[in-house]
Length: 150
Image (cartoon, rainbow, N blue to C red; front, side, top):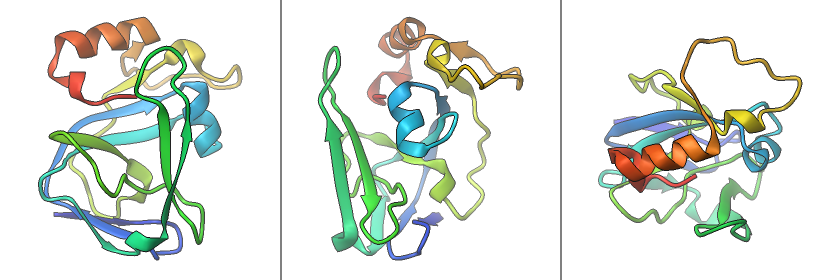
């Protein structure tokens, strides 16, 4: 079991299973929503996930789909603005902001995605695989990662 929370601790959650992937997304929407070089997102199982405090404080912001669904949707704590997991996920797994997790998750990041869209001041030097938009979409269509949308 892992536990996590927003910056102020008002929204808390737990998850029974971290399933991966652990991706670092460099798309412009993720960069803007985090104010950083990338969004660090890790996949967890929907089964065994629950919001344990502050569900009524979770808000969402949605941008329309650019090319095809799904749209870009971000969940956050209305008190501190910190990103938090989707309180009502669907499917078998979904991605959560890795920075909100308090406990060891047993995974390290496994890839950079949308690497061609990284900020011009960002230099990727960690040796992890770097996928372009087209490469990650093709990878997801042909692998078990297909169920986790960007």
